[in-house]
Length: 485
RNA sequence: GGCCCCAUCGUCUAACGGUUAGGACGUCAGGUUCUCAACCUGGCAAUCCGGGUUCGAUUCCCGGUGGGGUCACCA
Image (tube, rainbow, N blue to C red; front, side, top):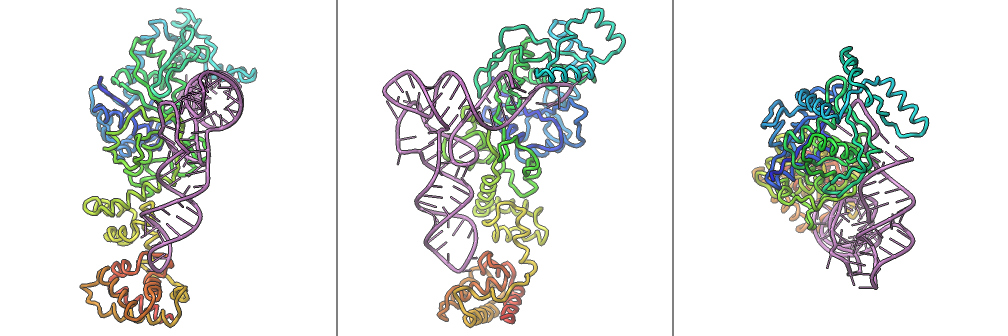
């Protein structure tokens, strides 16, 4: 069997991190089985239409590496023979499907006004009953329906929940689930504006697009019976279903804005690497069966398996994401080469001062940041030496005299260093020699030098900073420190 | 409230019915060091509760509790 999965978001403005995980697992399952990953847009609610959201969604997916094989494969570009892949362009298909069900006697027109429905709901709630449609229009006669239609009365098409004993549905993750039709409403298939509801569009499209596995969020589990009933009503074979556990806020509520970032764009914009984000999210509800944690998207594609999915919902923990991101940054810098160059080029967008020195900045601060957007704040003192308390120049285990000596010797020695040899290694041995030759402690030299050139109590090591600053600026800063003492 | 799903350290998770219940993040302590990171070593920390089944339950069954989801002409 050809594996065909799909990600079918509604374009409400941004790609939610929960959506990312759903998309990722769908993508991985397709890759794992050499199948196809399809991107379809579910925009059957005109009220919720957000301009530009579709393109943003596609870009976000592609940005993190989840390139669709079919459907919306790029902004404004469709590929595949089962299109269109935007539901608002498939209205006729849904309308015909709904009509088919009416002809089969499995669906019916409903002319109930929203006021009546509203009132019905209120009354039911007052009586402590579960709100549900009372099925009034089920009983409409053929002539009444014709009359209403002729008068152009506002109508929806409802599905007729069949009078079966029980409905058994199957989910690959949760197993068999049995529900009673009494708990199901005669739900709406086609709205009065001619658009399909999710339930109809979803089923019609998943069949039409030959989807083999529907991988979606657990919030859809309660409506799975409706969907199964629909497949049966149409006479279609239903695809396999996997309902993924939800992602939660630290307080266990459904993952939402206001408790921090939830959109992929936000995370990327704040300096999280797509690869780290993907890696972290993949491990939320899935594990490789080993203790390995670092995986590229390609490696995930090979390792992924539905069997190792977890059933319990997971809290989205930014701390661990930070660790993944930091780990990726450190590894890339350590690896060097093209990866490092690419990261530097990528980092440029987070650097306001001297972006051309991105590579150096990464080397300097790479091990002490978890997000690339910290680069700017972390490096601020490089561009402008801040005012600092001169007392800080003296290391806690040192004295004023030793500090002055250390600084002076450092200034002398570095002044005489050939600017062509102004490298970290040479600078380090110069400073180290001062310590050795004058019977000083490292703290008598390294500490005041570091403070003099950075104004910081915490910073990268002196030689690294000095190399970055260059001879001229470095010597000026040392000079200044001496004058302060 | 009805229905549905779920339940191992604070968090993500591992454990053919037999393990000192493992790993990772975080945290704490120590090492390294001029500082901070990084790095290395170690510590603290969990099977929701109650019944069964079994020689033996984290694991299987039932009940409870807790958490979540869902009950729209939204997806």
